[in-house]
Amino acid sequence: MIISAHRLFTGTELTGPGWVRTAGDQIVQVGQGSAPEAPDLALEEDEILAPGFVDAHSHGGGGASFSTTSDADIDTVLALHASHGTTTMMASLVTGTIDELCEQVRVLSRRVHAGDLIGIHLEGPWLSPDRKGAHDEGLLLAPRPDDISRILLAGEGTVGMVTLAPELEGAQEAIAHFLSAGTLVAVGHTSCDYDTARHAIELGATGATHLLNAMPGLGHREPGPVLALLRDRRVFLEFILDGVHVHPDLVSMWVSQYPERAVLITDAMAATGQPDGDYVLGALPVSVVDGVARIAGTDTIAGSTLTLDRAVALAVASGVDRAVALRAATSNPARYVGCADRGFLEANCRADLVVLDDAMAVRRVMLRGEWFSA
Image (tube, one colour):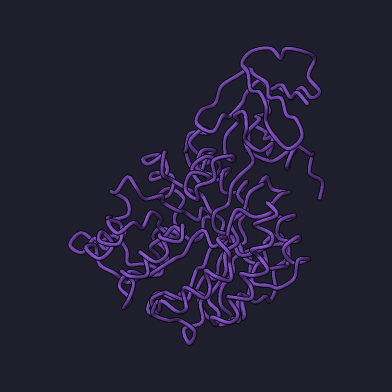
């Protein structure tokens, strides 16, 4: 199939006119100017052809969650986010018991091996009780080698990321353990100070789990982990840009300032794409009012109801350059999680594409070389 477009986002820049040729589930050619033969699809002047979005941190959507042992639930989450342009997902798990996490990881690992997921993200149980967010405090643990080994063994190489509070006892050894297994480490849900965060980065941590959320704020005398994560070029910076978690103008400033490192995530939970009401995140009851999820009876935010198309649109509306906003939802997260064949319009990348209008609304989605329909 040949698709021609007046504007293409390559993964790094907006260019055009140009064209993309796919064969099966792969992109095989990308060119500038007129297509070499009549295109199968010629996009409208106001449309942009871009790589499919990559969500490195999401818990669910469509009324279902990745914290499941049901393939039907996983299909529901994937379909909901694919309808909003997300063609690659990291399945994030909230804190559970080690036994529960091992079982969930076993189920999800099959979908990683099948190519439906890019990996599994453990957001817990190795988090600070003081910055637990929507995690069950009674299940939080210091990282122990035996627990880590059990979960990694259950995942058979599919646990791609872990969020870790680096001040916990055993965290230094845990970072080495995860890195030796090929699992990237992100600093998050932490009360650590600046020096502790810097040390974690020197040990190999390369992620900032939803920067600013569930960690101390940036202070002028005690800059905390935020400054350590911002200033080191090796660290990718996750942002939940939903207008609730962080002020959009602050996110837009930092996304624009760090265009090669900013990563838009959803941190979406089951209520994404669903009406307001009562839901569950892990074992905790969640109430969703006006699209904002909070632990029932509290002011604590419990994930989001965000989709990546909305995050990109809000970034652009907040003043972020279109190419920079798209980069934060495509090539940057692909690089973050070490996925070489996603996030770019390049030969040998998977044929995952999204067609957007000027307002960054999704018009069409191609997944593995086929047009997606929910």
